[in-house]
Length: 402
Image 1 (cartoon, rainbow, N blue to C red):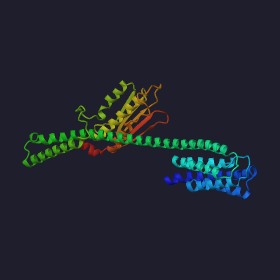
Image 2: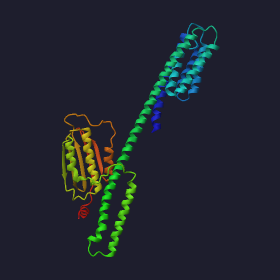
Image 3: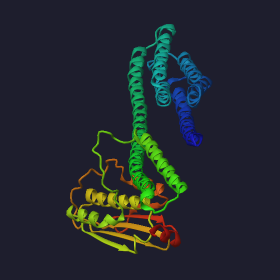
Image 4: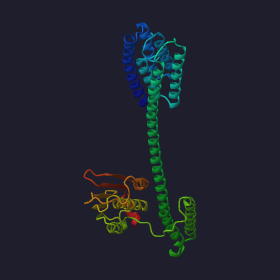
């Protein structure tokens, strides 16, 4: 992919520079012949050397610089004595300044500055070694130095500006990726802690039932009593290992919350809380959720998705009418939260560009519970969140209820 992204740019540069070099060749040779009385053969040879150095600079800057200076020297030695500028006549200076600008655009600033110094020193050598009696040398060098420095600084500034913008874009992309990864890790840790609470509750119930079986069941035989003891010991060992594994994830300084984990039976309380926050919520539950045989992980994931969706409405679209639909039929638990556009545009509680963990968490919860979630804006305005979770077969659910 990187090669495919570089080759079109290189071809475009070669096309532009090659076309410009052809035009400059005609301009330089014609002007040198007609305006400075340079012999035709020398004029075309020098102009060809100068202009051929332009496309060559895209591949090999130092051989191109040598070719460029060879053309400049040929022009200077074949230009007849007169009142015109020497050793850099106007057409020669135009091509040389264009060459320095091209080096500044395509090479690093250190290479561009070094090329500029080489050209200036070469021109000084031409003045010192050239025929005496030439006029316009000082003016030629001053004009060239001034214009070439301006072009050099402009091209270096342009390339450095582009480099800084690319680095800033890369840094923003890295920060966004790091924030997304951090949000995912934090949400996974929170889900892991809640999963620990769910499993710990179930294992505690199993431990209690296994421990009290000898007292609840009359005339239990010794073999069964020993089996219940082994089950109780296994649950204790499992709980101990889970606490050790989750020790690094749990914030030991936080207050312990020993309340039961929420599920879909608490949706009424959640909707009422959102209404107190200024969001008109219409809650509809279809089907008997208790008879559906929902696993604790699915109930918790569905509850958290509804909770996060209502929280997003409160934060980003306060006052928007919201509908919550929950149905358990056809072997599937379907949860949908849809909010409309607020009647008036209030000031959101949070800035819209702030990175949040809610969407990441909803997707992760649905995936870990074996379901899927669709999140996106509605064409008519507002937002829609739809989650689906598979339900156990009917006979299995009935067995769980029994």
